[in-house]
Length: 141
Image 1 (cartoon, rainbow, N blue to C red):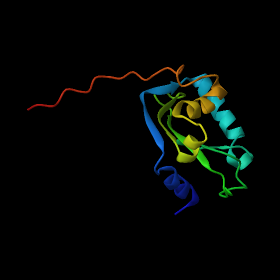
Image 2: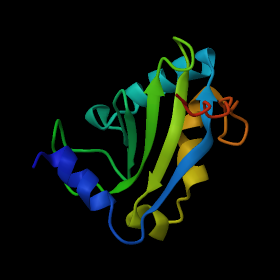
Image 3: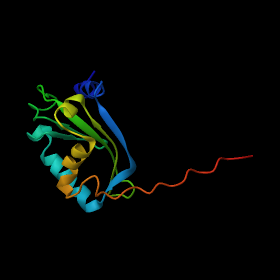
């Protein structure tokens, strides 16, 4: 198992808080760009505490000791995102998970999300929300 898979497996044990964001939070284009730039600047590979990938942003309690070497850094939580939706330059936040370590250290779904969104001058509560459509009617013969 790769180290990132191992860290994710450890994240999903008892005491974990995971919430599906309904309706999903939409990070507008300008804020999305600012968030992505700041997460990259604060990446664990650059001496920061964030690891950002196209589908997952992860927050750690301290920087890593180089590429693929978390050196005991504890995962606080993850934010699952989708880039380019609902429009090309927006980001959708649809699930947030706080590990037991994160919960034990006072983190919540809202505080974790706000920690990332603050770089775009947003909060989870202030984010625009996706429009929920009614489900399609069942097909009948």
